[in-house]
Image 1: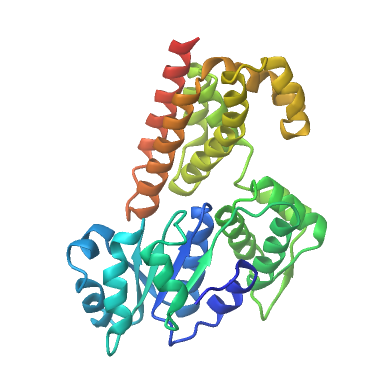
Image 2: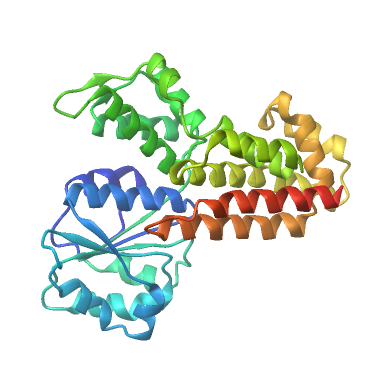
Length: 338
């Protein structure tokens, strides 16, 4: 069955035990992961990763795995990421199985409406599908307020707007930051605490700041400053993922501008039309990026950055060094292109 983004939170916080398969799909993959993590928290389940390629090779392995008892007892959830139409036969077998012990969660990017996996999840009563889109404006603020309540945090609209803005509208970063604030304040839904600007000041927010600076230094080709910043910041796994997402946000802002220049528009006109979309202090930096990075390299860089993020998210022991290596490679490419 299809559940709209506005209603999915309630479904995940109070899971229907008749649902065997959850499909979170759409362009905001980090938001889909956050939904999956929210479901696991509500179920009190451990994540058991299963490769989509294994399900494709042996569709019966999915219902078999879902029917197996957990090795150490307690609930678990089978997690497939990235997922696509290749797992549809396995999901069909799962939904036809007589009995299952574990739910299956699939994280997919954008799927075709006519694709086998989406059609199956949308139509079956024992499946739930929901699309994830990057929240913007009022939607981002509503997401902050909703997730804050779930963490036992009372926030006014001004604080919610700040958290949404500093997290760049990234649902996963918003959820992670609110969990951090809740831990700091020792808040729960039964024992709520007030989230203030002072708390955000004290703990910071993972969406911008230093994490944005690292990506900008790399794209600008400032290798010496980048190495110094990496050494100073001491990247950890969580912060490293935030760095990659900040880099992706910058790339997604630059790509359409660069495409217009490639089509013949003058750089000055393109920057002038960008208006408030580019912060005035960053316009000189963005202009240098437009001169340095051709469209085809920007496209490859987006793909490579997404690959590294997925590898980190799926790994039990993330190789954080790969983030620094990626940033250094980007900086060297920018240096050569000058």
